Image (cartoon, rainbow, N blue to C red; front, side, top):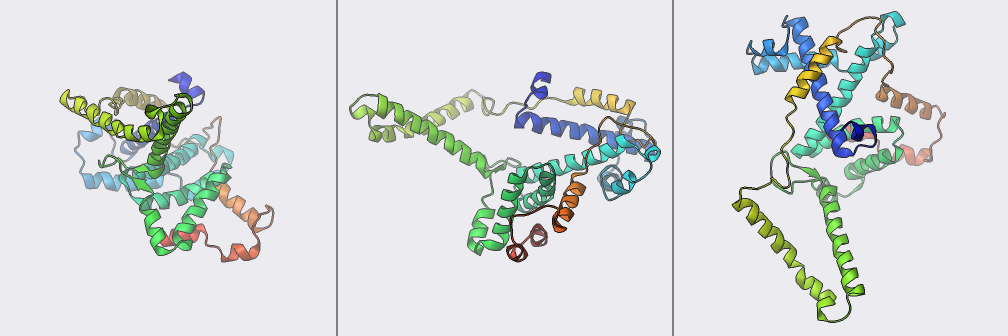
Length: 318
């Protein structure tokens, strides 16, 4: 695993890594908060007090204002160096990014289209600040077109097909390109088969396009037979959906490591090798420079003034 993450990990590995690190950061926040406010020495001790769900919600709302980056972070970073706690400031920003990622992922899995659009609006400034201009352009144009440009019927059709649920199970919604890419795979496989059979397969009725079309239903028959075998031998889903790893021991070790020098404990003058950039502020600075003419844009003033903006999309979603 170390070799994978130190080279070029794929989406699945990065998605899992962000989720696990975010969970550990969140647990450390709870551990620090319960120790400061309630006097508990560990989360296990806190759970033995049997807090109610309302108590947990009230504490969570309080913790968001303490351990997640807000407007207070800008004031913190303007202070003198000896009054800085760089690790705490980095942790606030990390928690903010983790929550934005988790909430977007949860909205997609839950099939909540409106929330997905709202969180995309939150991610656009971040992507813009790190230089992903192509993604920003496509996402911005898509949201503006779907809310202000397309006719009402087309808007409804596109919005309600952004997400699909192939299995029909809860929390199993996927972006529509999941099915599009799968369909492309089948199309390419069919075209490849067609090429070899028609181009290199000789002559005769067994090597014609009509015969390939006639054989196509066998794919569905094979899928049905595979499903019957899995069901009869109690193998349902075992071949396609592996059991998620048990991370309890790993999380426990990470929490112990974090507790030795928790980034969520305020300690003035504490430094760090790296300072995490507040990407929303960076995007704001870029916007101001564009406004004052320091950055040139390709759009003329007339088209820009008549065009809807992200703020209009946000109001529409609210």
